[in-house]
Length: 308
Image (tube, one colour):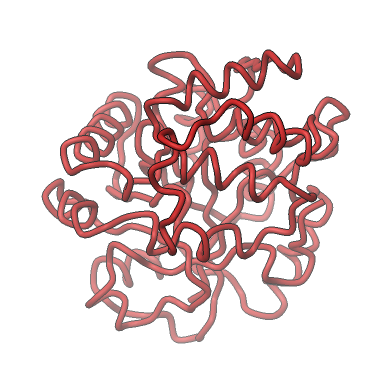
C-alpha cells in the first residue's frame, strides 16, 4: 500500500500569493491517476490490515491521508471523496478548538506566503539571539527537514529556524515581532475545519485521528510535555467524535520529529496505529515492527502532485 500525505488542497487565494498548495484541479487529476495506476485501499481492506495484518491482494493500492484540519479538507477534499465513493484519514491538531488561536506552524506558513523569504530571514536574524536557538546545530534538523519542498528563496531557512531551531519558549514573542514588522494579521475564522464539519466527515466514513494538541516537533519536548500533547488531543477528539480507530500522526514527520518517548506514550495510550513521513510502501513488516511509524509519501512525489 502507498500512504499519501496532503496538506493544503485548494485554489489560488490572492491574500496568500506565495502559499504552497496543491491546486484542486491537480488533486482531481492525481486521484484519476491513482485510480488508473494503483487503485485505492478500501475501508475493509484497511481494517483487515491494521487489525489483522492482512495486506490487500493487489500491491501498491493508495491510502489517502490529510493533515492539519484545514478548512479546504471539507470544502474541497471531503466533497470530492464523497462524490467518488472514497474515504480518507484526517488528522486534527486540537488546540485551535480549545484556545481559539491559530497554531504557530500555520502562522509561520502565513508569514511565508505574504512576505519574501529573504526579508523574513534578514529581520528574524536581527531579533533572535544565539541563546534562543539551542537546536541550531542538531544535524538531523538541518539535514532531514523540508527535503521534499520546493520553496521560494529563504523560506526553507525561515521555517527551519522557527519550527526546529528556536526554543519554543521564545516562539510566540518572535512571531509577534515578525508579524508586527510586516503588518501581517492572523485570522483563525474559517481557517480550520469546524467541529460540525469534523463530525459530518466521520459520520460519512472518514477516519478522524490525533495530530497532537499544538503540532510541535515532539523530539524537542520531554516525555511529560509529549504525554500532555497526546493525551489532551485524544481527550478532546473523544468529546466530539466516536474514534472507532484510535490513530495518530506525527507532526512534521520524519524520524527526526519524534523519539522513543513518543512511541512509548502511544503504546501507553493504546493507540492503534500512527503515521510517519517516509517514502516507502506500507507492508506486512510495518504491521509487525512499525505500527507507530507507518510510512507515507508526500503527494508531490507523484504525477500532478507538485505544489503551486
